[in-house]
Image (cartoon, rainbow, N blue to C red; front, side):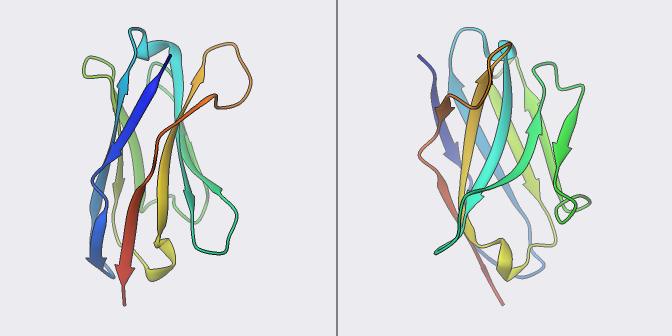
Length: 119
């Protein structure tokens, strides 16, 4: 069983920065590809970024490249999302998710952390 707990959300002005963390309670954190997703009010959940088990490869959407950086520390069982140059349209609940290596889809999700960007 994997438990994921996000933290670091909050209220920030446009142009500001936040760093989200996702702490995983699992023995083999390095066996999981990790991802960030977000869901804004009235919208579907969307992919933000992902990082492979070793951290050697990362993926993100074009709109977030250059502003958001995903990283992980396997020694601390923690994944991060550094968000810079935040825009009001980045306002959403941000979720972290885990995909066990060799399986399809993200099978484990956190409860989410609210990010609100004011204009």
